[in-house]
Image 1 (tube, rainbow, N blue to C red):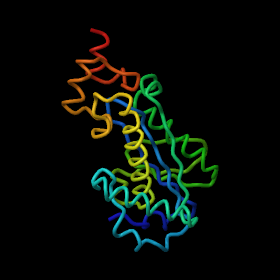
Image 2: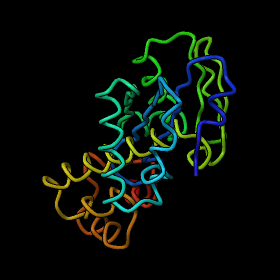
Image 3: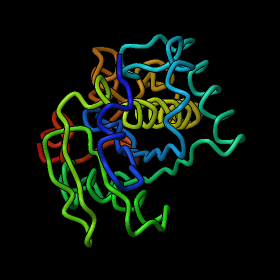
Image 4: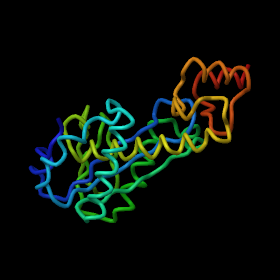
Length: 207
């Protein structure tokens, strides 16, 4: 269960950063940053927070509503950042992920913040101090909250896009390469929302 043990050791306000959407064949990568203004509410999270990828959709939505209520009560602040499909294809997925995270950090306008980043890469942004944490959403509540918020927003976006592009199952697979999704890419061709540098789309375009 993640907690605030990392955050409380730091003398700066902490922004926990996580992303969703590095692996899919379609759709953007979305990052979220979450800043807790108080660490005294840790026990309230027992029924909600965990790795967003492990939570059921119902549990994730309940967790998201809980985080929204904390935002309304001015306990937390969170922001989102997106790198679109064209940016992913131009930069590569890791650099596009970093771009989306930098956009998140800029929205906070907190020059003295300490960045806790889920993963094993460095953001190296401006003069921010940072720490990368592998499996950070299992350890830091700031990262775990950011993970849930990003996942809910991206899933909702992919469901919205699936209304126009109904043959790829994005409302269920969120753009990931399921058997049905890949079969229909071969059958119908890629859409404007597919990543042209990801296989099998790359080979299909250049064949």
